[in-house]
Length: 186
Image (cartoon, rainbow, N blue to C red; front, side, top):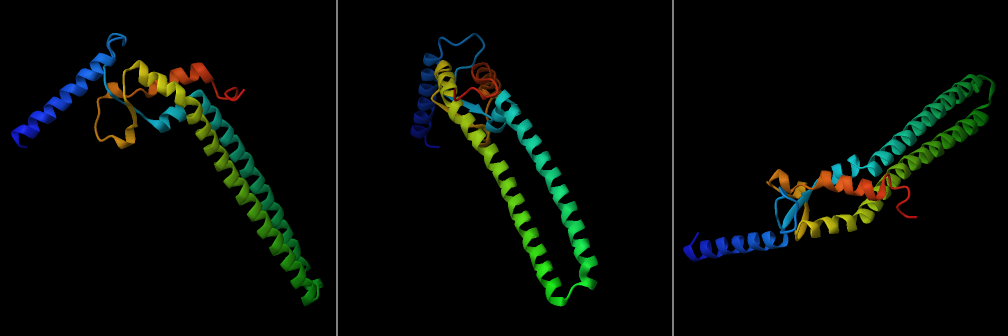
């Protein structure tokens, strides 16, 4: 690096550090001043009371759907066996009509169950989005409290000091303000 560029780079870093220090004078003792903070978005949601509630509800709904799928599979298997057993007593046309009706029913059930699974995933993602929309002001206040200019997702940061990660503190603040999220829209 050329001497002038190096000097400018050092001056820029020094100015950024001074700005961060100036904005962070009111921080609690031991809290590092930084213009940049990081958060683990996945852990923020998953470890919050809101995220744990959504995970429990999603798991319960998924288990109910799996049980319903097993029940339908058992019913379809029995119906298919009955159709196979009746084959000897039906004409070719009657059997073909019954087999086509069974196939159409099976396809429709599969389509319906697949749609329920997609709805379950969409519902979880909608709750996650609602969480982030609701939590955004809390994140903004924390950014202000820390004198930071930006909060980055940890996945987009190559290397940072662990002290810059505010995930646990955000979880505590969001849990305190919104709990499991049920009353967030009220």
